[in-house]
Length: 84
Image 1 (cartoon, rainbow, N blue to C red):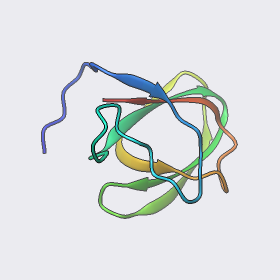
Image 2: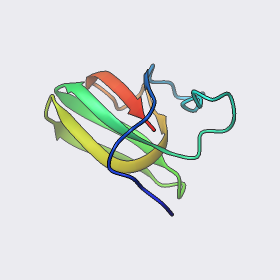
Image 3: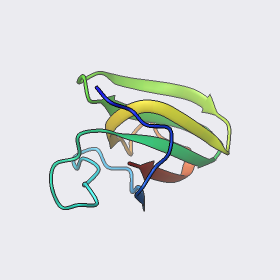
Image 4: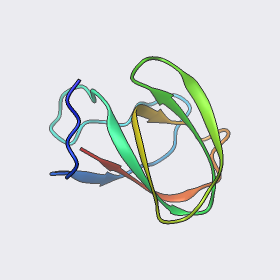
């Protein structure tokens, strides 16, 4: 897997228990990293299919984990941005 250090695209994330993060190019989201603007917990699904809660994520955190979904249930963090 190739992961670069800079991003070329970004989109606000609306947490959902049913809908994956859509790709900004219109295709399938093959994984994005996240920026979390506001403190809280964040529950994600990784590209490997793992569902995990990250507890107490500080505002201003970049999460270098390839994710396809941010769940509404289990997520209290705010101002989440997907980065590709």
